[in-house]
Image 1 (cartoon, rainbow, N blue to C red):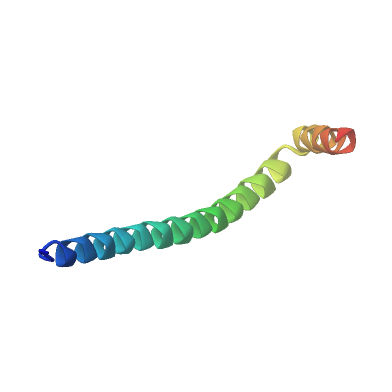
Image 2: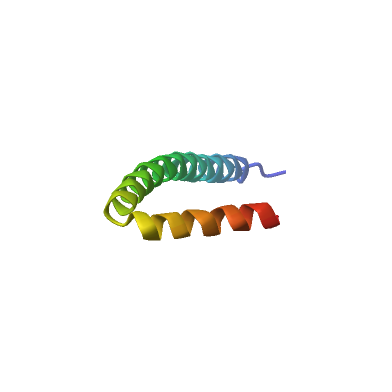
Length: 71
């Protein structure tokens, strides 16, 4: 019986697991950082919008509350 293929199979499996691990870790770190950055930017834009246009901000807020109450 020839076992020359065993190292190739082990290397292939190890490489596949390593690539999958790097992709999974990169995705989770990128998603977490992206969400945090988006929250900060959205908060800042919301504050500026409400200070510059308080009437429009009130309308948007009332609409948001209406949507929440309909759920």
